Image (cartoon, rainbow, N blue to C red; front, side):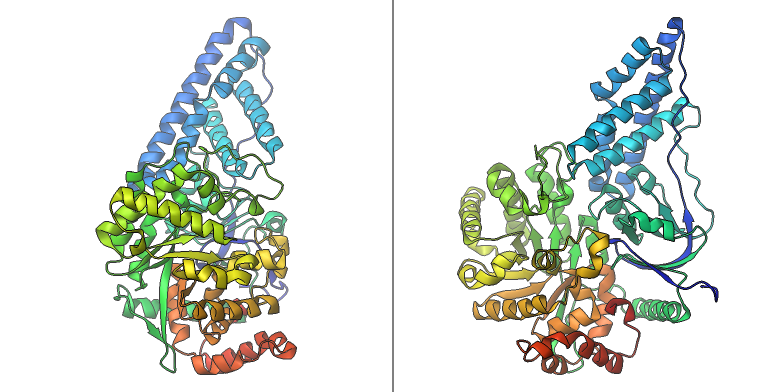
Length: 588
């Protein structure tokens, strides 16, 4: 709680792991200072090289132990995050470079190793490639491990607080993330990173609310301050006021009550106040997320992201490995549909087995369906696993990301037919859909409709491509308004065009987790939403208070300049008058 003289301070980052927390913030430093410059006598060269080799071996063994522990607690997918670190410690460039500095420059082992790490780090930074973010984190992770063994401290250099706290890091590496205790960590605020960083993936698996990409905003969060953080929106309030704290506690009390009544509930549509059925499905980042979807009664999976199979991996996942992952999800939501998005790689998501050169604008470059069509073996491998899972369980749907042209759909249809013939099933049995996330698709949906079965509105990317705002840039967050009049009109046109084409229509973007955004979409006729499992209880409760008829009236005549420009405040007034609980955290 803020003191009378401490005004609330609002800091923006990037949403990385869902959930909200209120608590005291504690800064944590896991780094280790550069070792002092120290030279050795020629007769000590072999001794120093042996010291380095012993520390390297101990570091590798520590990572393997951590990998095994992660596999047993979180799963093999998350455990694979540590494989690149072992490969780095076995890389001749690092190992031989360190030995050379010891032999030729007469440097002590710790100094030689740190110099070589610094050189490799500078080489990575010079590439200016987004895929280097995770590799840099891995590099810094092994640096701390080896240097800690060299100076006799061992691998555990963390000074974590004993009490529950929101932890603040300049950066967070995977090996630090998996050592955090979710029972004591209320949330994570991280200066660097992105939603697809390895540490963010682990934070989601561990269920810790996380905001990343805070950057210089960290300087506005003093150690010991009370913070209210939201991993769904990326918002942080330092020294929150009484109204914000009261709203937080009221919401937590309602969610606790809801869980006690409806936890482990069977999947079923939710009804609005006037009896309209709404379907709430789950977004999954990892197969094990399906357990959370099942607990909250999600009607299947509306977006199963499959990048977890390839990000940071040095080899293409086998067909069987993919099949096992898809089967796990299908078995987790029996009788319910699973919409699988094909590999959305590129942008800020990179597998190490692909040679992806730096691009001026990777988000508009070689990514998603473009990569899959250019690498048919990779694409066929995934489609074979999908069709096998569908043949065994049914209920699979294939969703193509970043489509911009009819040709991409037709080429996919051709490949799908070839794979289906090979597997021995009909490709027409598996519904094929596309993400609506580019203005090109909005304008040509009538041309695409005869060749697809459904569409999924991706409000996140559609917002950034329409408004020319990088949603990964926290500084521009105030411009990334998913309820900009241009976008609201697009949502309307998309629903009309998809309905006219006889397509099933869903929404899988973050807008559906925002009460005003959800109200707009329901008012425009959308009835199928896919959300993070943690958002489903709150949205289920909200929908029960809303009238779809009233919202449709509020969303009429959006071509009228005054009507569309006043839609947000009009809906805000409606929610304040209709909803019997606080929704202000969403409407700023």
